[in-house]
Image (cartoon, rainbow, N blue to C red):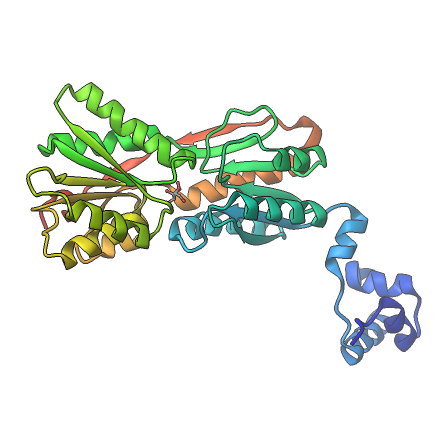
Length: 339
Ligand code: RIB
């Protein structure tokens, strides 16, 4: 069934197209009896305004998109919730796009968002930036803010957490607990966050001066299933060579490692300590409460959305900013804190 047009509403109400437009956009400018006739016609015909066409004509969409790596990861829904509070307050709409850590899906989303001429894009990129698709958006006047990715690029803002410091905090903690065989479970390393957390772990070992073996168990995804698979590899290691602690690139992996180790009868932290990253709500709620590196998730989203709207509104006068938050290690029972 074809959509009802503004013209049909005008004919039903016996008014001009301009009067219908005024009722929709500046209702206070229309005399109450006339406004009532138009609203009755809208209800009777079931008219729904085509906001995207109106926004495109006006050249000012109110839609902000956030493109995340994995919408199944509570880290990103918390970030999106923070962004949403800012976008809602600006009478905008936030749409969530999921790249699934797949560069092809990310590209498709960015191309569609360019076609839609959205007001701006918040992006946690799969690969490194700058990328041609993001360059095209910016060239079209659609601002992009990198979220959860520090990148001192001249043509966009970025908001991130110091992941190198996050990895450093974890290994300092584990070395202080006496661990000398540690596994780092995470991947793909093409995701900058994974590589930087590992880099911080290596730096802490170098700084400690203690003989610590850091064994990398690379995963294809940052998921609970990937954590279970990695734990199976560790379980298969002879006890005398098995790591006594596991640093996981995020909490979903840590939850998978915890599940598999405990299923196999290994005690956490007595046999194997575990530390995750993000401090999502499930970390504290796990069967063995997880130690984790806390990221200010909603604040990341709020800050990124504020920078994006400022750029979209200021346009010419905007100066790009690169905000870097500091992580915090939260120690719980999975790495030795007393109950
Ligand atoms: O998606 C990969 C990870 O990067 C998330 O768990 C979060 O830690 C982000 O920084």
